[in-house]
Length: 348
Ligand code: FAD
Ligand code: EPU
Image 1: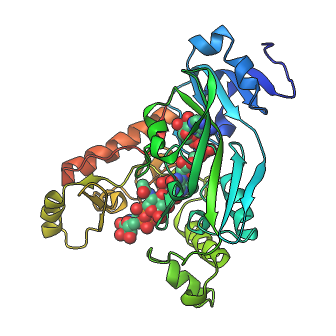
Image 2: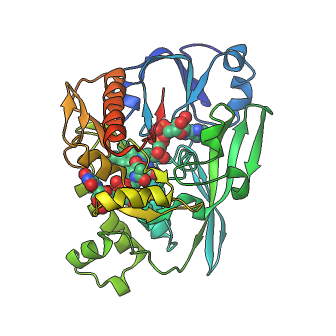
């Protein structure tokens, strides 16, 4: 492994800045940064003692990571590209997508090919390889519904493996990969997308957005739903290019229905949704706003004035400052409502 070297399969940089590689825009350095362009390079790379010994962090576009410190080992990105059609008939389109493809590009590629299902997930930042990690979801959809197989490099076995959806333990912003972060590097995802599917328009705002576009909800195409979702997202969420952020910083907490009802008795407008496992989901944004944190800041670390669930870097906050501010928010929500908030992004 030649440090500072470039080969067609990978390139290596020592003491690399990650500022441009995380959507919070915070500074952190990687002892070694490896960009992999060919999956076969993983066999060679994981044969080196350093990758067996030192901590390895897989990084996509860094839109769901908060660096509070430097990374002492290897940061590895899968910069692989390619969408391969595996089967194409009147019912479904089955494709294999390389981990390094940009998620939103793939969504639009699939819509242009006349496949549907991913329209509610338009404009989510990040790579295809990261999509299974937290089972990305938005506007009433979750990616797990369309995943047929996850291909990964298994560091434990030193081999490529194919995981079926049942093995991936997908849940709300959750999967096997979140629980075994040091084991799998996702190299490609196979999707099975329907050719026809009734659009999912139940999430608040989609129908109103279609109305504003002059589209009758009953006749909306998948591409029009994607456009409505895109417009809604651009209005509601701060742009990371302007104010660094990672989207929702906390998960919507899942609690016992009895506890939710006691909160509802005091706060009639608290949003509550059904969740799996007999639990209900509370709106973390609502709790944070009611705890008085929306638009608050300490230096350059703050909560967005546009959306209470978004922790933002107003300019030069460090990752440690952002994390400290997130703790303040958690404490205020705990003190006011007795609810424990859990961070959604990976905290390094
Ligand atoms: P990274 O942030 O680089 O990595 C995220 C995690 O995945 C890390 O733990 C990393 O180690 C791991 N990882 C990444 N790639 C791989 C790989 N190939 N193999 C193994 N592990 C890997 N998320 C939603 O679910 N819904 C939303 O609506 C949504 N909206 C967002 C809006 C904004 C403005 C932003 C900034 C983020 C939003 N997110 C949302 C979060 C983010 O877009 C997703 O989590 C996305 O999947 C992260 O992709 P990434 O490539 O940036 O991954
Ligand atoms: N709300 C407030 N104050 C705010 C914003 C929202 O009180 O400033 C309340 C409103 O009552 C609103 C409710 O929260 O109706 C829900 O808001 P929103 O529709 O924006 O959804 P969210 O629960 O805040 C979730 C996901 C988002 C996803 C949207 C749309 C989580 C943690 N977040 O946000 O995902 O895009 O729904 O489906 O589940 C992400 O994971 O990074 C992300 C952005």
